[in-house]
Picture 1 (cartoon, helix red, strand yellow):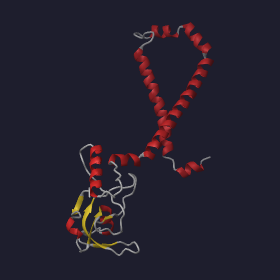
Picture 2 (cartoon, helix red, strand yellow; picture 1 turned 90 degrees about the vertical axis):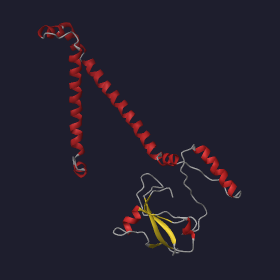
Picture 3 (tube, one colour; picture 1 turned 180 degrees about the horizontal axis):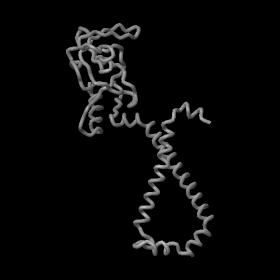
Picture 4 (cartoon, helix red, strand yellow; picture 1 turned 180 degrees about the vertical axis):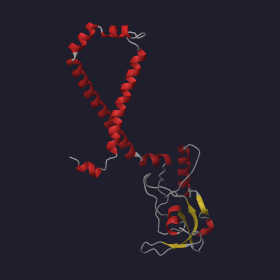
Length: 236
């Protein structure tokens, strides 16, 4: 089956006889219908109208996802391919290999054609390919979010540049006066060891301002995230 057996056994060739149809269930099925007892040996019946087929449980396997990585685990029951509950026109086989998938695919196609020339060509998909296909929507949303994030950063940078350029332009006269007065020389004469452009002092000041700015943004955002949505909607 390709799914680890947790309890009991797998469906085996001797189950193809005229006895009760053997079946294997998953963990969710066992927890939902047999929470306090072992399901091995229990008889179950398909509740779908028109199919009174009865099965005897011979094993329990791990839960598995089939349609999407986000799908919710549902109770599942596995019947033998040679004794199905419903008439089947196709079958799905799982092949586990450590070889190159390309060479294995070619060998599988040759084996199918050797079995019967009238059989239609088989479709072979790798597990990594199936997982990749199921994540296409998630990847699209990720790329869309990245695009909007970059756009937001660009707009914020342009806005910040505009504000700073406007502020500096308005204070051009003040900056010229400060340069003329030589404020740096006055401070250097008052504090021993301070150079014209002390790199340590500049780095410490920049780090301190960055820390203050981070706290100034984090604390209001944290408080806003704890507000009840209904209170926020009623706020005027």
